Image (spheres, rainbow, N blue to C red):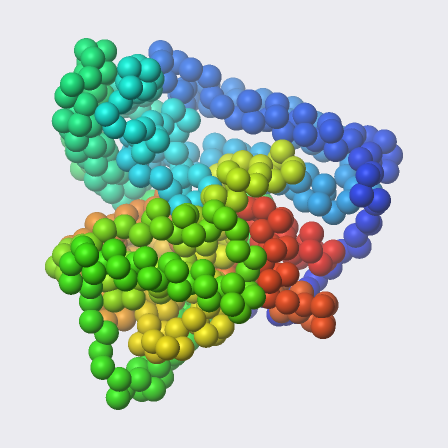
Length: 537
C-alpha cells in the first residue's frame, strides 16, 4: 500500500499570509479575482438549452470542452502562493471542478454511455449536498413541492416537466456508447420515472389542464424511451468500468484523494477483514444476551425512533462531543422514516428496525445539509455543493466514521447487541466498495460485483430480490470513487483526527475537532487536512 503514514504526512512548504492578504506574490491576481472566475465558471458549466432541454449533443459538448481552456488559463494566471491557506484551498477547489468537467467529457461521458443520466423526476431528497452520481442540469425536484399544489406551484411544475420529452428525444441521438451494464441498469432507473409520473398524475388529478398535459407528455416520452432502450440493449456488449488508469486520474485530480485504485483495494480488504473479525468477537462477548427483536408495527417504530433521537442528542451533549445546534434534533426527526414489514426490509431497514440509533449515527448527513442552509460558509466557493460529487470523501466519510466513533465513545454500552450492527454496516460498505473497485477495473461485471457484495455482507442482510443492491452497485459504476468514499473518507478523517490530537496535545478535544471539521465545509478531506494542519498530501 502507498498510504502516507498515519500521522506523519508528506508536506510541502506553506507560506501563511496575514488573514487580510488577497494578492499573489507577484500581484498576478487576487482572491476577489478567483471568486469572479468561480462565478463565471459556474455559469459556463451550465450547458446551453436546445429545444427546451440542456444540450449534451456531441458538437456542443466538444465546443464547450474546447472553451474550458480559457477558464483554466484564467485560473493558472492567478498566483495564490502568498495567500492564507484557506484561500489557497478555494483555488484548488476551482481547479478540481474544472478537472471534473474535463473528466466527464473525456472519460465518463454519462450523456453518451449512461441512460440513467437522463432521469429527470426525483421524488426524494438526497442526504448528500447534491445528487449522488452524474445528473443532468434540468432535473425536477418533486420532493420540494407540497401537495395539494397551489396554482403557482402547479404552473411551475408544468414548466419543469417540459424538459422531459425534448431531453429524451435528444438522448436517442446522444446515447452512442457500448457500456452494457450501464445500459441495462439504466433501463430500471428510467422505468422508475414512469412509475413516479403515474403516481404524480393520480396525486394531481384535480390540477389544471396545463399540468395534466405536461404530466401526460412526460409519461408518454418516458415510456417510449424505455421501449427504445430495451430495443437497443441486445446490441450493447462492452465493459462499463473506466479502467484503473483513468480511475486513478479521477481520484487524484477531481476528488483530490491521496490514494490510488490499488490503495483503496488494500484499505477495503483490510476493513472487510476487521469488520468480520470485530463482529465475531462482539457476538462472542454477547453470547449470553438475548437476541435483538425487530420493531413490530408503526406505533412501536415511532416510539423507538423518537427515543433514539432524544438519546443520541442527549449523549452528544452530556459527553461534550459535539456542539448541539438548534437544527440537529429536528433534522434527525424529519428523517426517521416509517415501519416496513419484515419480508420487505432492505439492509438499512433491517438495521433500523432492530436498533434505530445504529443508523442514526450515519445521519450526520442531515446535519451537514441543515448547516449549509442555516449557517452558510463564508466562502462563496464553499457555500453550495461542489460539482461532480467532489464532496464525497467528506460527506460519506464523516457519516460512516461517525458510526464507529460513537461505538467507541460509548453510545451503545447499554445495548451491546447494537454494536454488532455497526460492524455489520462496516462490512457491508467494505464489500460493496470492493465490488465497485473490481467493476471499475473491468475485472467484475456489475452482477459479479453485486454477488460479491451479497456474499461478504454478514447474516444475509443483503438480498438480491430487493432494489437496494442494484441501486448501490449501479450508482458506484456510474460515479467512479463513490462506492469507496465511505471508507477512504473515513480513513482520511481518522488520520486527521490523530494528526490534530498529536499537534494540539492537551488543547485537543473531540468537540474542537468536529467544530473545525464543520467550519471547513463540505470539501475533500485532503483539503480540510491542509487547512487545519498546514501540511499537504
